[in-house]
Image (tube, rainbow, N blue to C red; front, side):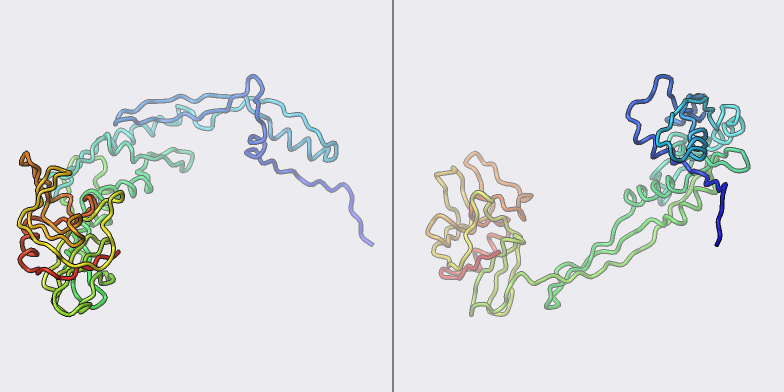
Length: 344
């Protein structure tokens, strides 16, 4: 058989785990703090190191190794020195000062778009230790974040081509103009510490294509009919399979919704008056009694006319509002008895 004796198993202490479990620190406990260079708005401040008194984890590990079964150990405080002294930053400060001399003008077609100066470049500085020396650098994560902010600020995203699922184009889309952030990052890093100008490079991006469900149904009824989609706030005027017009509308708000269903135009007036709201409704066409109708944006008795910025939003009292121009077109196109089909 085999046997062993006098085996020593070294103990590794998790300092962070112990710290998490200790709620009340003893008097005199203070963590050592490294010296650092603080940069605020392009100005350097020297923050000296602070030595401290911390738990002696080395002694604790030795105690447990030598007496592994007693179950209770004493945490004692020991002097703790900061790893980085202010003297260690003597050669680092000139490096920071050099970086803060950066004054780069970012231009597009010779027009100034952004200036990377001491205040901004100061936010990009980081520090790394190499061969017992602390170097000032441009932090990669920080500059990538800055480039992303510039991209969002200066780029124009491509507007997608939108088609209905039957192939009909709703929106032709537009090309985008995206900032070449890889080239810009390289140019900026090559000119840190200098006063210069960099012409921004943009790349044309083509629009993607988006297919959406067709909100309207051609040929739903023979002859003329009006279809209104409450979910898209749009109206289409059909003559059988042919869509003659499509307009943006404003239907009823949530507290006064436009009814769903199939109705028909029962009355037409070039201008109707509402005593309830003291306003006029040009190109009025009622489809439920005289309470609900299609009409142009209302005009109050004092001459105020509702703006077209409300179109596309459900804000009416239940009627279907159109711009004055589109309401006139629809009024002249429609007949008494024209079907009005409203749905979500």
